[in-house]
Length: 166
Image (tube, rainbow, N blue to C red; front, side):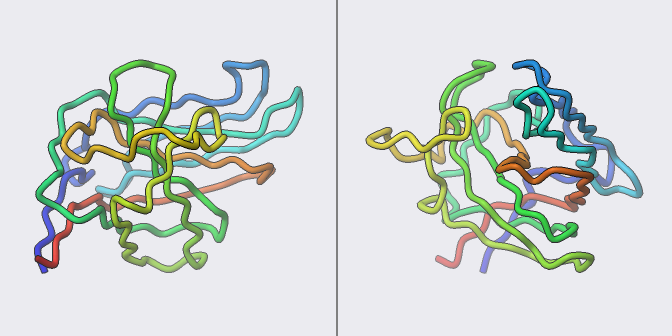
């Protein structure tokens, strides 16, 4: 098995920015920071004013991941469900590709996501008929919490790696 780290936070990692439901009038808040060499995505999801999501996205880069079968992440979470998102354009808005995960609370774990498991979504809704993810054209990585999971949240991300069993 081959695994290559693509994103790590040991030396600060890529800059990430948050994009929350405040873009549509909501009041959820989130932060993406680095603590002890680990990325920390935390905040509070609020359903007030038709809100309900918080997200963080890496700065735009050029990532050709076509030599891998998928992504592996090392995370520790709070028992809530999160989305790992990939975007193939530098545009602020548009279709992204998401896979959901809900790791056991309080335990570091490594999760694998084959590229075929990433579903095209636009503003939280599936986009039937959209082309599948092109792993050679990844521009950003992102984290999302949504689906009316009100209250505080915390997801720690040690790294994102490409994996291949070939």
